[in-house]
Length: 121
Image (cartoon, rainbow, N blue to C red; front, side, top):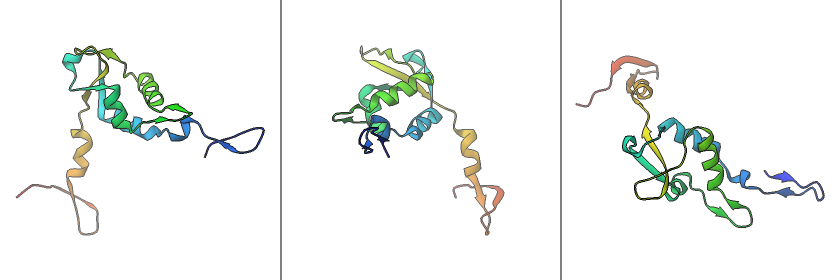
């Protein structure tokens, strides 16, 4: 799981061992970055990001949140100063209607998709 120490052959844990890149993918698939808080639907402070990514400080290794923030920054989600004076990432939701459409199709008896849309009666 961790890197092997050259001297002892034992595994060495790093912050990277606790980092889950799919969490950043999920965030980026759900949100688009905003440069201005007025256009944002959500404001992610470091505290809110820590909860979203379940990123804790790992004793002797450091703050796991830094890995998530660095990756978000590389993908265009930059910190700005919010109206409350806190550093934050401003986001808006992606248009998910295109992605949800296949899920609205009813499945036939054998699991194949049917052309009819599900409706609530």
